[in-house]
Length: 132
Image (cartoon, rainbow, N blue to C red):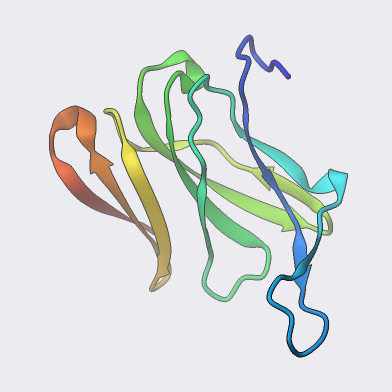
């Protein structure tokens, strides 16, 4: 699929997992088509890491590396996403790093999120930001 002229797209899909039985190693996943959201349209959109917002069953933060997102160079980005029923929508991207970003991780912390990443492009390597 192509969106905004780019051949690859980062997507999130809202799924539910259920373990059936007492000795089951793998859950059964149910992923309705309506739960798909485009995270970004860059040719190098990396796998988003997710963290649920404190006290919320509907909001999560997606943190990911991207090359070519918004027709810009390599960078690290986040988007706050929200579920409504089986639909999922993500807000505007927030830049966490304006250089080539690797190894992104995110966790809920206090009333916000901690995002850690390798600032490879700026040679700062291990870096972290708090997003309220």
